Amino acid sequence: MVSEDVMELSGTNVTVVGLARSGVAAARLLQEAGACVTVADRKDRTELTAVLEHLDQSKVNVTVGSGYEAALESADLVVISPGVPYRMEALERARRRGVKVVSELELAARFLSAPILALTGTNGKSTTVTLIGKMLQQSGKQVFVGGNLGTALSEAAGRSLQASKMGQPNPYDVLVVEVSSFQLETVEQFHPWIAAILNVTVDHQDRYDSIDEYVAAKNRIFENQTPSDYALFNLDDARVASLRWAVKARRLGFTRTQALPADVAGGTYLDRDRIMTTVTGQLQEVCRRSEVRIIGNHNIDNVMAAVTYALLSGCSLDVIRQVLREFPGLEHALEIVQDRRSVRFVNDSKGTNVDATLKALESIDQPIWLIAGGRDKGGDFSRLAPAIRQRVKRLILIGEAAPLIANAVQGYQAIDRAGTLREAVEIAAAGAAAGEVVLMSPACASFDMFADYQDRGRQFKALVNELP
Image (tube, rainbow, N blue to C red; front, top):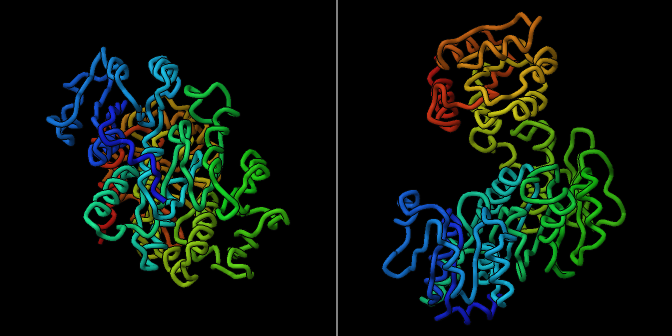
């Protein structure tokens, strides 16, 4: 149901703090709802020129630069973007005056009547949300996919509000929403039909005083659920699994390492090489692990979560299997580019640090031809040495950091230097044998040779696709 609170926005003074993507979307939604909108950001107007072009400035008050906090003084409601610390002193002063401070997520949700499928976690959110969206779309549903990923939820809320005003049907059957801990900090009524925490590792400790505080923020995703909703937990993550005892919703789980415990109502699990599920009330095989196109143990977790959501939403196993066979992964994140003459080419250009490249290497069981290098970010390349010796058949180095990486893996002899990415791809394509993998996971920034990691990844894909 759309919250009755949205009717109270007409004519009220609302300040949106933070003019990133979600802040702009929130401002436009508030305008559609009839509010008197002020946007505020500590950046100067010159830094926000491109952003402000997306707003009708004749109808929005703009307060930016060093005095931006003054925009809070006349607000009846404050909406904050995820990057705005919810405990900043100016917001605390507003609260003390009795002004409500909510996230863009909370605002948007109050305008939406379609079921919300929400998901949070430290890692894997974007992949899982994308998978769920594809499964629902291929089942014929009108689906919004976004939130912290891609399109802000307020964009969906705005379209829904416009449709309602025009007497048109709801544009969405379901909303699949990636949610961050920042967005959850100030929720009040946000109420997903299905909610999950994929995993929790130490992160954002510049924002939170402790890991417990970080977990508590994520745990708010379940706060407003009822016994008619579903709460899904990664049973292999001790911090996440322990949260299931306090929820009101029906508990479900997914696991790679154990049988489903009796205290969950069902879920999805890995039985040797088969992904199994009991979500529909009966034991069913989803597929063999080898049928899943995306690679890595962490992605099996993401797949099991997505399968659970899709089955609860009425998707058939046939549709789910088709998506799992075809989905190559998100662009630049262990993205399968092509299988050429039984050699798999994988684009992991988003691997801009040592940890990301280690994760990529650990995700591949076949012999690897690794293309690495770029601009050094101060990473400890010696941490790559054990994985390279164990998993990499040949190391091809590019960019400014090439000598640093070579020095960090002393004793490893199978190294080539390439002056360009094209040369690196050609060396790998000429040498890799059937059953091997050519992986570009640089462990470095891209700015020595490319505009950004996306440019690097797209050039890699173009070069692979040009191979004879």
